[in-house]
Image (cartoon, rainbow, N blue to C red; front, side, top):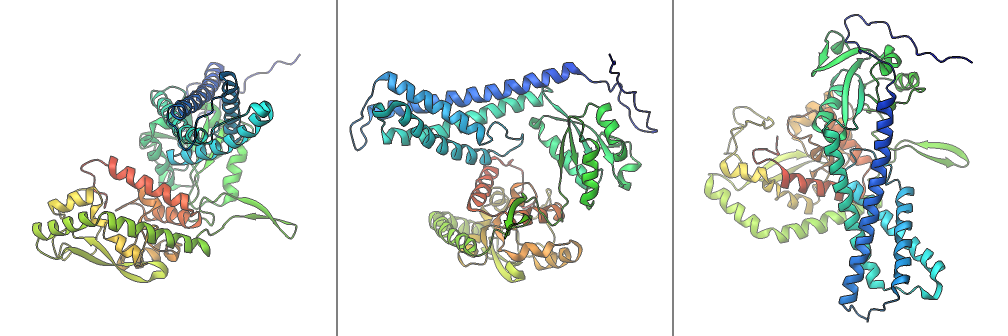
Length: 505
C-alpha cells in the first residue's frame, strides 16, 4: 500500500515574508464546513419562520376584518396542510432561485428584488400543489393571499437582513473568515484592499499581494500594511503556503490570456478565484450570454440597454417623476430661494455650463451655495473636504443635496435624467477625453442628478477612471429596476451621511 506524503515546503523566497507552516489544517477546514452548513440551515429556518409569521398574520387580519366579502374558514387541519405546502414550496423555490447561494456583499436592494420574485413564483406554485392535494377542500381567501404575499415579502426580507447583519458581526470578529490573496499591486489591487478594509463584515483576511509585472510593488515589502509575498509565478506554492481560500486577480491592462493562465495554475486547488475587471475593457462587467444566429453559436458580450423603446420608457419615467417631485417640493424650493437671497448677496441660482448627451452643452441649475466669484482666483476646481468657500446655508444644503433640487427642472426640460452619468464642465471633459480611453462614451446618454458611480462613493476628487467604468456599466446594463435601485441607494446615503460630509466632494 502506498503512503501519501506531504509535499516539501517551498523554498524560501529572498526578501519576502514567509509562512511559518503551510501544511494542511484539517481542523480549520472542518470548522469552516460546519459553519457553512450552520449558516445555510439557520437561513432556511429564518425564512420558514418568517413565512409562517406572514401567513398567520394574514389569517388573523382577514379573520377580523371583512374586506368585500365574508371570510370563509375551513378547518384548522386544512389550513395547516395549506400552510405546510406553502412553506415547503417557497423554500424549494428559494433554493432553485439561488437565494441560498447568494454571494457575500450582495446589496440589500438586489436581495429584495430576488426575494420578491421568488415569493411571487413560489405562491403560484403552492396554489397549484394545494389544489392537487386538497381538491374540493382547497378553499382560500384571495384577500388573505394578497395580504400574505405582501407580508411574506416584507418579513422574509427583514429576516434576511437581520440574519446577514448577525453574520457580518460574526465575520468582523474574526470568525469564519476567508484568507484572501490579491494578485496585482498597482492602483487596482490597492482599490480592492481599501474596499475590503471598509467592509469587515465581508469576512476576509488579506494575507498578502502578489506582483505581476508591476514595478510599483516590486521594491516594497508592504502595501498598506499588507506584505508583498512574491511574484505571480509562485502562485500555486503561495496559495498552499498561506492556506488561501480566495484569490482576487486585480490586474489593469493585462491581456485576458495571462489572466486565464494565472487561474489555470491553481485550478486543481480548493480556492475561489475572482477577477476584478480592467477599467477599460470591452466588456464592462456584463454577464456573457450564449445564443445562436441561424444555428451558429454566439456569445453576446455587449448588449446596449438604453436604445429604442427603453429610451422612450426612461424619458417617460423622468417626466413623471420630475413633475411630481417639483410639485411636492415647491414650497421648499420657494423657502430655500428666499433663504439664499437673504443670507448671501447675489443671484438665487448658480447656473453653470455642463456637457450632456452627445457632447451638447446645457445650463445646469443649482441653488447657489458659495459666494459670487468663488472661483475667480482659482478657475474651475473640484471641492475638497476642507473647502471653506460654501456659505453656512450652502453647507447645510449640500449636506442634504438640497442645492441640486432645481436640476429636476433640467430633467423636465429633457436636458438631464434623474439617473445617469454625472455631468461635468467642458474644461474637465476636454481634459479627460484626451487622457482617458472611452471617456467620451459616457456622453452617449443624458447626464443624471445621481448615478451608479455616485452611490458607490465615486464623487468629487476621486478616480476618473473608476467613475468612467461605473458610468459605462450603467449605460450597458440599464433597466427601470436598476434606476430604482440607484434612487433608493441615493436616498439612503443622504439620510445616513455623516453631518460633516460634503456630498460634492
